[in-house]
Image (spheres, rainbow, N blue to C red):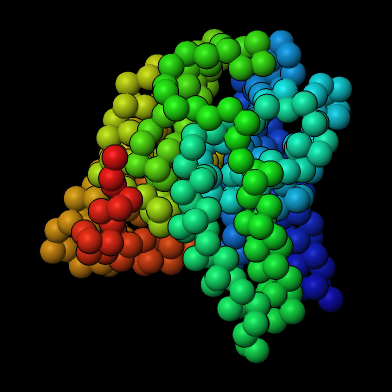
Length: 318
Ligand SMILES: [Zn+2]
């Protein structure tokens, strides 16, 4: 009984903190994306108050995450005027359609990279989902999750941008000025970051992710160059694609760990030692109880970094 009670309290705490929203700077809010081992993550959502409404960076994947965003807009009595997608991964664009339904006048900004992903990575992911749904070993709960995921890909036209960001530079979005970065062939073929110089906050998308970099669609060496470019910006707070906000000094810790990881993966060092190097590097940025999960992610991602050049070349083109 006591154990059962503890479990339900833990579940409650998880549920209540899962979509926790906080004000990270005046007029700038963060909805933390969930990352529960064994399930697909939601990316962080950053919300800027702007003269013409809210400017939102990324809309999450699961409906619960996006609903937290819609509830916030309702509580502020302010429409979502614009969404800026940092990149096309489903944990960042998955909520676009719900936002469009709630705010039909919203303008969605993103790079052009989703189009190629729809015929490439997402098409093959869709085929994998279909196979898993059809598999006799898949539980009904898992099959339902896979169907929701496949439906997102079917819906990709609704997730696509209204305005394509094809050059970096300063631009006004919903009446607020931002420096908009565009990184080619880093985490994806087109990664967008947003720097609000007035508030000193930079939303980096998955160019910074804790507790591990998601390297599946990445060109690692160019990703490193992007981090070096971002490091030159004088932000006070960086909101990563996943994980807690970082000060500039904490970002430098992440950047050094990333660089060390690449160096290790391209050397003869064992996988275990590269994982240790990553864990030691980012130890100041994660909770001790996240280390086991981080190790399991890196057990996969060091192999990803060591894929043959022929496989990764297409991710680095351009
Ligand atoms: Zn992500």
